[in-house]
Structures are given as structure tokens and as C-alpha cells.
Image (cartoon, rainbow, N blue to C red; front, side):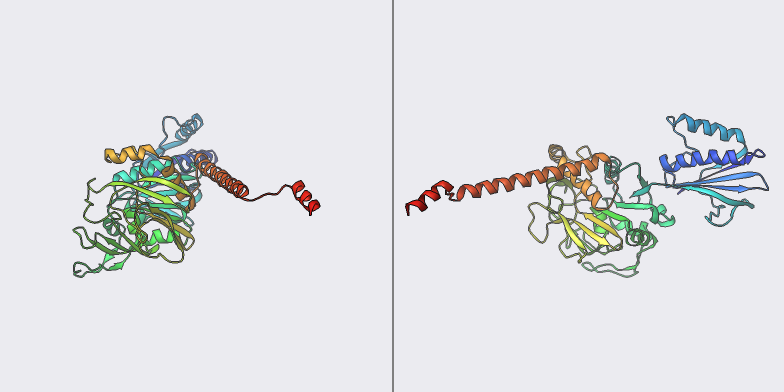
Length: 440
């Protein structure tokens, strides 16, 4: 979490004008520049103000008012007004350890008393992408690129956060979706403060968790209590189930219990067979072909590298959203959805977030991804819609267009069936029937 504080000594009688300027700037920060919130505190005895703003963990260049070059002129004028009103301002960029922020109580700063006057909170719901120990940089980048072009930017903001932010900050209520990308699942446990039992675990037996940790607890709370959603991709999918079985009997064997347990069943992999996957390598990567009966989408071509399938039932609240083409029943469930309390989770063994331009993928896979991107893009959009994410107008239009085309296709099939049956029926003309009666 990045916190910044701007302390301003006010000219006498100028507080009202300064407060108006602050509200203009604070609204800009929360609406357009990624700040979670901005608070104004006032000390009447010292005739001074303190502005405390918060951003997720991203470099803010030690500036309380990070205005870009293309910021509106009105905001730049406001910036100038604030400077003319202030004297002896102090700006600190690193986390404020002496700060004791309280939304409904007085705030202490360097021994001085400041009363909480007003605050501006972010009006947008956040989508958080985990990017810390275990996360694959390509998966994070591809997920971010896909999301920012798909979600409604007026109501939703996409942020990349580290484990410290997930563990230490209160973000659950303001988050619409938490994305756990591909990579390596085991480091996720430790990074999010889970604790393992201190015991020897023989090969072929599962490790045991002592505590799932505060980070995982917050992810579960965000979904189950506050109605947010979880999207796990590859390693993130393994991480969202009750039990992981990876390379069973092989050199990379992992048998782990779940920390999140959104899906009550097992995630088993790799889906396309053992002894092909290698860490930090494309040796076991390939193209996966998926079909979704749930979303009426076929021909989904997706990057795959070590992902899972779901061989067991995930409970009455779960459903299969897509299957691997060519794999037999029982081991072909590729993407599953689960209702979890007030929220939902989607777990995907394949990297449906990858585009053909993803860095490092093999030429053969890239060629396949280039040939038919539309079904994969549509499927990704429908996953977000299933998770309750606000979509952009363009993304919503793609869903509507597919629905219209599907309905037209169904009507065409029904019409063809009707006329085919009519041709097979023996139809006797009415006048012929009348003549036959007269002859009898």
C-alpha cells in the first residue's frame, strides 16, 4: 500500500476554498488515477490541513498529487490554487508508520490533533490481479491486457497487487474480482501467510495445513461474504480447489490440500499426461481445444502448459463450463464454475487469457491461436459476465451479437426440419378429396 500525506498551513479564512479544491483533486485521484481513497483532516488551532491518500502497491514517484501531462486544465488550475493557499507543505511518499488513520475518530500526526472533516472514496469496484511469489509474469500481463480492454472502465478498475497488500490491507468490500494467475501454486500459500504442519511427509502422501492464513481468509471473505468473485487460471485453478493432485507418481509430484476450497473436488493434472511438464519451459506446452455447452461456444483454442482437469464432483453448487476436446469423459472438465456463498468462482485449467501475441510461446501454438481468436475472446468475456463483472459496451455487444446469431441459426434449423417433415407427408388436395366423395 502506498500512502501519501500533504500537510498544508492555511491562510486565515481560506479553509472553505481550500476544501473545495481538495474535493476536486481527490475526486480526480479516486476516479481516474487509481487511488482507493482520500481523506481531509483539519486542525483549527494550527489553522492547517492534512490530506491522507492511499493507493495500492504501485510506484507513485513519491508524489501526493500525481497529475499526468494530459490532465485537464481545470485540475491544473486547482493545483495552482492549492499551492497559492499553502505554505510549508510536507510531502512524504513511503508508508506512514506514525499515522493512525481512523475513519470516525480523531487522527494523530506528529503529536497534533486533526479532526476528520470529510473523505472521498473510490467510486469504482476493483479487480485485483495477484502478482507476487509464484505468479507467472506472462499470465499476469496477459490477464491485465485482456481485462482492461473488456471491463467497463467507468465502474471498474484493474489493479495489480502484491501479497503484502492482500494480507495487510482491507480491500474485500471494494473488490469485484480477485484473479489468481498461472505460475506455481505452492508459493501462493506462504506468500498469503498460510502455515504448514511441521511434520515429515512421506512421498505419495498429502501435506497438511495448520492455518490457511490471513490473505486466503480475506479472499474467501471477499467472495463468500461480500459477493465478489475469484478467477483462478492454471496454478490459480489448482489453488482454488479442496485437493491438488499434480504429477502423481512423477518427478514433480504435488499432493496438497486447498487453502480456498471454493471447489469441493480435486484438480488433477497435467490434463494431457504425465512427464511432459517442465518448470520455466515450453517443453510441455501445447494448444488445447475447448468447447462450452454452457455458453454455446465451440472451437475455443487456448494455450496450455501443465493445467488441470476436474475428475470429481465439486458439489451441488458447481457446474462444468467447458471441456477439453479429445479427452475422454471423466477427465475432460477444463473449466468449472462454483457458487460460493454470495459470490462465485471460476477455475480454468487452460490459459484462456493468452493471446497470440503472448511472449515466449512456441511458433506452432502462436499460429493456432492466430487462426481463430474469436471463440476464445468470446468465452473469456462470458466468463467475466458469469462472474458478475461489469463489461464494456463492446464486450456486451459481442455477447448480444452471438445470442442473435444463435437464435437465427436455431430458427433456420427449425424451419428446415419443418419443411423436411412436410415434404415427407402425403398431402391430398381438398378438391380431389371432394371429388372422391362424389364418386363413392
